[in-house]
Image (tube, rainbow, N blue to C red; front, top):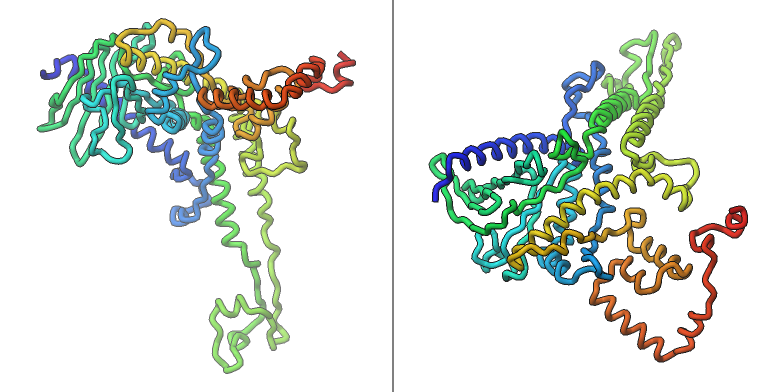
Length: 475
């Protein structure tokens, strides 16, 4: 079946959006990788000295600082006490532990990424083939296919009323052949480019009623639903820092050797022991400057003070810190005194809040993905999934060691039972079940431990909250 005129026009609009995003992303990607080209280097740097250009990768540092703290750990249904096992099975079958990290990084870098949901049976064109390689695994209808896609290849059109996708398309090239996939509310169409026109290869009449593509955006606005790169606000400061560092590099190159001068000398004064005239380079870099000519005077000029370059770079770093909320130590600036644990947490408070805000938007996207995946799996919409909750690892304790330390303190204070600490540590349901069995067996061997634990008086609320005795009395 050929595409209708409306579908051809829609595909053309989406193709233009992808090409525009690709050009914008190329610049943003260069800033993330520290490979950007600074166009205006200033009057003091002639074009032939561009080889001395020094780049700082602060935009990449900022993006990574947020992305490293974003880790999804499960989905919890209403009236459930732990993460849903089947939803988590679908998540892991699609290797989303890793792929979700790529999607989050893409959204932070470019402002948007996309998640596509498809049928899990092997008959669909998007399903991996048996001969495709080690990464291809057998699929079945109980495991929908979920993939993350880049805005370099995909674009969507949103409904102005619901803000949900009404169409989406992916464009890609394989072995020199251009392909496209058009996603509509009730059908997915696979296309191939031939003879300067799109030819339909296959279609899936899934009749979902929704487009199986979910945008994952960063800092979307009412007037800009496509999202915004986290790096946008510090690109100008990054360029200014690059100019300052490049000036410092050139100044260092020119003034690394103190300027020397000779007054009243004759050419014959610059000869070696064999009477050969020394080259200017050999004469300048001689270990000892001494002449037999008593009328000659030798001296050196005071070297330039390059501390001003360090000061301006530190100033730019402080400005970047103010804009992003990154602690100064993230930007390579050492502090006089080593920070305490409380100081570090206070220093990172804005960064933690930014991570939590990003997770709020990502949570809605991933929950929508799971709702569509369950619809592909079951053939009908599950109303329970509308109240699904997403479990995230704490942004304030991003490492396992920090999580374990926080969990131990909460259990010792009597705020959480041991079983709840296992959930906070991200243990799977199967792992928690085994741990519960091991704990029960251990208590059965030594019942006095359980009795002693029950007789231990609970700590005061002030102590449990981390306050000292003096603070509690003062309250």
